[in-house]
Length: 100
Image (cartoon, rainbow, N blue to C red; front, side, top):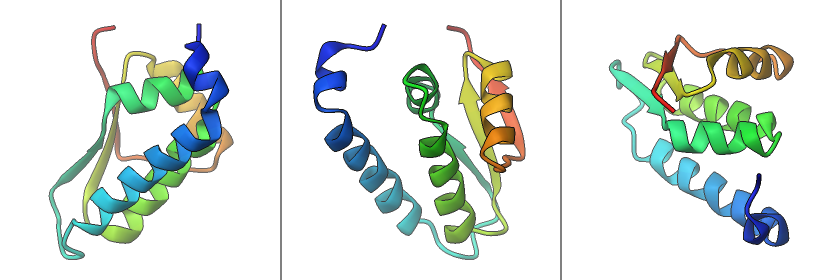
């Protein structure tokens, strides 16, 4: 179940989450060739709220910021994430399953 506060303030919450991703991506050097990871809490919350576009936007930001970096998404729900990424025509290099 989605917390009531998130339902009430959903738009501003996702705007803030997007701003945090944007700021983090902007701090990565463009030549970075290591691994960037989308946090499981962020990914799983977006999945639970049925907001796959939030994940797709984060993927695009990371790809633009560091095109040579390996991008992984961490989640407790790999199957749902894989489906969401397909629907959003977005891709990561790896999906890492974490314990729920």
